[in-house]
Image (tube, rainbow, N blue to C red; front, side, top):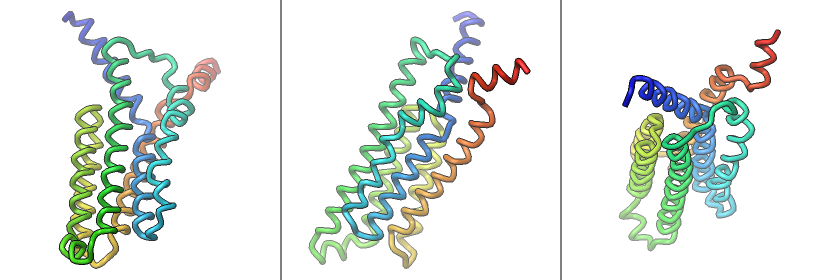
Length: 206
């Protein structure tokens, strides 16, 4: 590989990473976790919709927030494949985390009293561990290192919650709000760093 090819690949990698620094996936992930925690708190099957509905807004938000600022970037070849794989990996892995968490929670809720007593304090640690593994796998698949941080936070919140006399839904909501706050900060920084293309052109012309 020539030096020029190496520089182009490095530039493409930077563009790819910048494209995913908009905080969209963080906000939606946090909203989904928060919705799952509310479902646990109020024990209402109707609220479970809040755990998966936010992910329906992923592409619309990308289209309205990210695409107008990266219209001049066209990923090709390896980068385009990587971007497509990133979308599939994030949606698939996060959906798997929510599905497994919901399945375990419902199984625990319907278990016999003696089984629930045996698993009390351990079910959330188990779910948290599984979610953390999936988040870490998503980080490895996409190259988004902050997903490793969210995996560590998931473990931390669940382990701490297991030793505190509070409802596990509270720690789950707090985890979701923490990730959402991170996403909002990333989004604010992204909007400042990357203005819309027409805004940038008008600013250059003035």
